[in-house]
Length: 89
Image 1 (cartoon, one colour):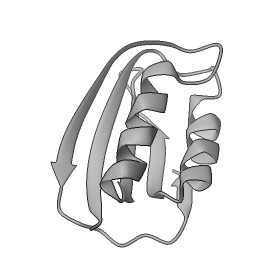
Image 2 (tube, rainbow, N blue to C red):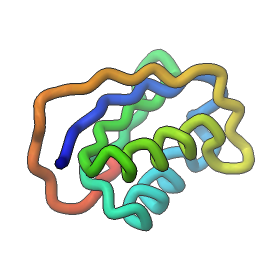
Image 3 (cartoon, rainbow, N blue to C red):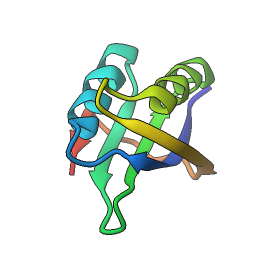
Image 4 (cartoon, rainbow, N blue to C red):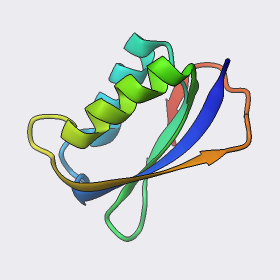
């Protein structure tokens, strides 16, 4: 079964290659969707995949790349969307 989840990652997550590293991890996991910076300094991710893939990605989002300092990750299940690949937008 496939699901989509929207994540909002807070902390020091911009300017530390968070989007690039998130895309790389999502591709490794076989997750589709996108990642983008938000004007308020957060990063937003829309990820679609199996529950196991999404759990693995969520666990990684709490750590992020080495220079990131994640303070919080909010997540919300959203209606299923079809994506090919994982993009930085």
